Amino acid sequence: MNKNPEISIIIPVYNVQNYLEKCLGSVKNQTFQDWEAICVNDGSTDNSLEILQQYAEKDERFIVITQENQGLSPARNTGLEKTKGDYIMFLDGDDFLHPQCMELALRTIKDTDSDICQFKFKSVMLNEKVDSCFYEKIPYIERISDIFQKVISKEFKRSVVVWDKLYKSDLAKKITFKSVNPGEDALYTFELLDNTKIFSVLPVELIYYVQRPSSITHSIDKRKKYEKHILFIDEHIKIINKLIDKYKMQSDVVQKLQKYISERLFRAYILNAYKTKFGMGKIQENLLQLSDMVSKGDCNISLLRLRFRIMYYLLKHNHYYLAKLLV
Image (cartoon, rainbow, N blue to C red):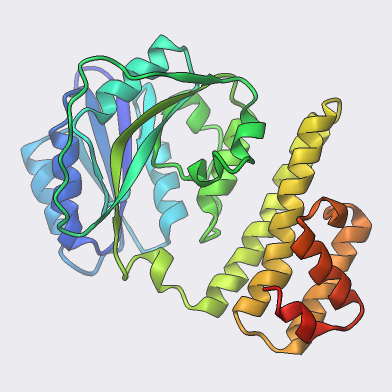
């Protein structure tokens, strides 16, 4: 290629042969064509690599990198190292794009001089027919100045995923993904937002999130998922405490951040431990850990919703089975 593309789209690929052609086809058929697709084959054992190579042979914009299986975060980090575009997107190998996704997101991020443009996604089932309407004009754009208050509100909670956004490249490359699954998207997003000045929202569905039982999200054993979630929470605390220190002069922002992390901690150590059906010994151990976080100031019980405060009171007084009724 004679010049660097405007958009680099990073596609981690692991055993998604039944979905991959639809994914890659949706990139190839974009109305905006100045892109490169960094396809990171993360040790696939099916025909995914062959499909990637077929696309790369026909279109030099598809760049295939193969590595031993390391997981989603290392695959994305490999992609970040190789990108040359002014803007970066992420796309999972089993999802696909609206034909105007790049066009509209790029126009929005430029018109608003944003660091990040977030658009909506639609959850679909495999083989579900999707009718993509075309947009002649850019829909309403929301500019967000108070980013963190939006992110930690109910309105914005699910938008910590990375694949519903277009990023300025120099911003996206400041942060790398941590190997914590599930939760790598949230950690990356929170760290990124700490460096973000303008965040725009394009309220139209431009990416299709395919639901499949065999995906990472659905297939992780409950106990392993719990252990991984605890690792995520530990990393999350570090990031939130850094933000609390940064915004210490804005008491309303600090309180919302404290409430956000306090609820995440209670859910991780108590609520999810009950749901995973651990024995009382594990519940008691987790309660001691949570109580230690309370004493250190990482968790503020007074900021929790009433149900959680009651549960904590019951547990502190050894009423484990009564507390279980509130799960």
